[in-house]
Image 1 (spheres, rainbow, N blue to C red):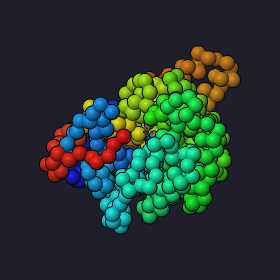
Image 2: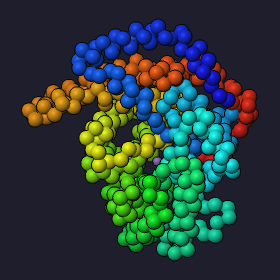
Image 3: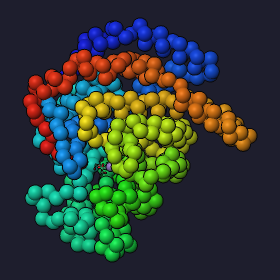
Length: 426
Ligand code: PSV
Ligand code: MN
Ligand code: MN
């Protein structure tokens, strides 16, 4: 299934006029308030978010999994699905692979397919949270932190293999997320587990090409429920610093204890030049992996406000690897991803509307009410015409969900692939 240029043009026909009216009205208002609308729209067009290869099928829970049918079962098909989302939104120009789930059988063919769809290979993810069928050692009691040297060595080698696979595809970053930890007090020695993890990461880091980054993801619990070795940003930052300049912290929105101030975390990491990657999702309770912006859109906006500040003021921090890390149990995964992309663009656009100079002045004057007015003024703006314009300029559709439905993408996929279900999922 491939979306043709003609289909994009067709789909835009009926809503073009009302889009233009809405855009002109908003652009006029924003320009009068001193905003550079052209530059905001071009920033929105440039913003690209990686789609993880495991998010293209129904995820499921430990209680069950309900397929949407027509799901991709090969890497080629996963890339085709991202191609569909990217053609419509022009925001999903990258894929994040998980190894060993996505080892290409023919590298040249995969690269060609991705190139043709304008999709880049973003960070590659290693997997030491599952045992592989032919593996000599088990990760039941941890991987990079394991007390057993042979297990650590196997996990280190796996990460090095992932780097080599990513290198052949043009990836420039390795994301390490560990399930390592303990379920019961006394099960692990915290210090030994942390030190082993540091030493293992240093061994992996040594194999990192010069122009690569290592992204260290943290998570406070699950699948281990008493402790995790890399529990929070502090642990991640210590490990990254222990490796070197090319190692960074990765923030996943779902990987915090309730009420954590995530915007403050991203802000300080950027100040220190150590925020390397970002996983988007939303949650009510824990690592729920729900559609971005579906539960706490204002929190997302506040986070984006700090990210935008950092992108403008912290040259010491590198460009970030953006990825959606969500799971879909009751929605068509592709529709869910489109909604997530829309929510990301919305939060970004609103953050771009924050008048940073006025905010600084209000802060200097200790005018707390004004500070809030400035943030909420930006947040309350309906920025959808700006996002539509950004998509249109880049060759996408005005309304991706309605285009997806009127083109009957899922129906076509089921016709092509039948009742396939993805082989893997989290
Ligand atoms: C598990 O929580 C997880 O969702 C992490 O967020 C990783 O990024 C992802 O799996 C893939 O390993
Ligand atoms: Mn994640
Ligand atoms: Mn997660």
